Image (cartoon, rainbow over the protein chains, first blue to last red):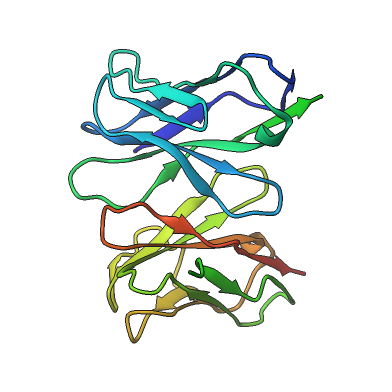
Length: 113
Length: 113
């Protein structure tokens, strides 16, 4: 079945550090890939997405590139802020009309001043 | 406009009891989804509706779980004979149409004693 594997947290970084959160996936066909973010006390929010190979999703300074050859969708940000502290979930939706989102286990990011 | 709302925000019940969890989607959204998030895990798909009908209920863990959406708007997730293993955060999401971005509610934290 479909699955998403992401690096375990927590990840602790100093402000302005470079962030990478690794994500790899297993799925039938060509899924769409997503990063969701959950800020403390809030619901899940879509951060960015990519729907086909080599697409780059970006939002709020975060980027991720859909790499079909390595089945990866790593999240990156060049300079993190304290306000980026949250739990980040990598996720996919299988192609072919499927609607259910398959999530990874989440990576908690803590940014310290 | 209001986002997805879920009630109650917290529910504590005893083993063997019946519970109902309510989801109010964003007005005009035709698709509605239920997920369950256990501690330290990512959300897991339970069921989704397109309009009033359950289009995919393959994620419901067993026949103690049932969901309805009688008028194509509000949905209720019903759990019979609750077990301690049902303790989790139950998330609801809605989208304008199938395949559209899913907007998540804050969740209902269910604790079965």
